[in-house]
Image 1 (cartoon, rainbow, N blue to C red):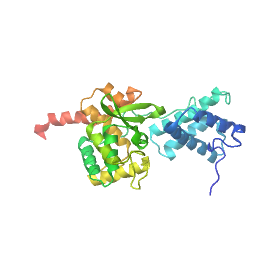
Image 2: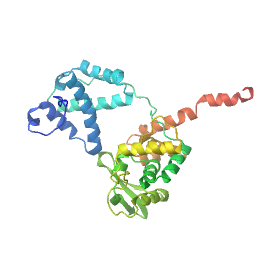
Image 3: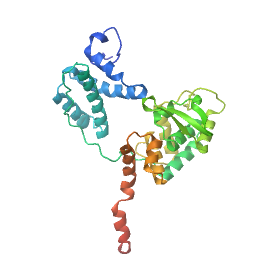
Image 4: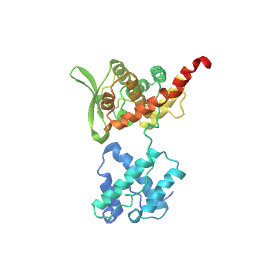
Length: 308
């Protein structure tokens, strides 16, 4: 069994954390977040602190070249996507920024670190309209009634996977004559999402006669988590004959956005429905959807159809 690296942030609160400036800095930084956001920030920060521990580098003594080497390691050794590198660097920069605020450091070593350019198009491609229909059909025939509810929720309402897995039966309700679902999103922001009749039927079928507890259950009868959800979606994709290189829950959220755009919904309304704080996030989905559909090669081929 390997020992815990010296600079690993967990446990954050023990008998020694007050005497350790790094643990205090990490605890103070992560305390700015809650719920899933804090869990993801902690995971990204743990990766950096582990990298430092493996090189016997005190993160509070790191200089800009060290951070540049960390970026290069993520790019060339781990082969992370630019968006992943940029996200992890945001967390590292955030930690050092709070260290400067708390007078633990005079300046941040991450200030002038070069980050990779993140392409304007989303790297994730959603399902086509026919692929989504095939996925829904396969889920409807599944012996686990939560499968159909899961695909309906992700593909037709667009919650993030952690939001869907956290849903309880008590989150169902009515508001102004609409059946609604209470969803707790990023930053513990609560939103009421209306349930179209088809989605409501799938949810009622998954609940059956239960009156409380998780809305979505795994095959063992316990709350569905994101890992189980990913495995179920891949299994359903195989049953539906949908051939995708890497099926994961976010593809259905992506499909939710692109299908609305295909249906003619205004970009601003799609942004509100998807709960994107920045309209540029929604535009990334739109660019990925139309880059191939509007490619001039199709226009040229149609123009030259008589000769080909």
